[in-house]
Length: 81
Image 1 (spheres, rainbow, N blue to C red):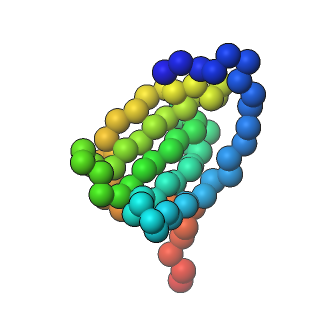
Image 2 (cartoon, rainbow, N blue to C red):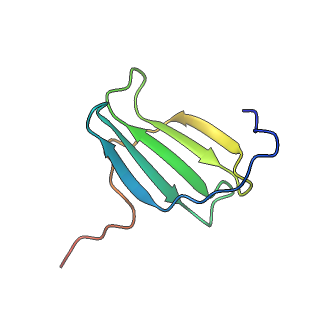
Image 3 (cartoon, rainbow, N blue to C red):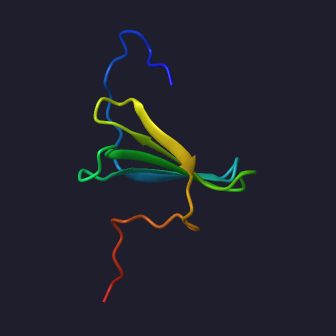
């Protein structure tokens, strides 16, 4: 993937965005222990299944592919006792 020349850094907080019109759910998440610590997961009725895009510490695409997980379950939610 090509990076925009002189592209600026920006910040996205961990969150889940449900777009009711398209039926897609976007999940932004970080995993500091991973070599590609930032990820975007796209869930919905996609022809080849859910997608996951990983970004490196500089914001460039590190990997992309089909996400085998079934549902959009954020890792930061914990079951209440």
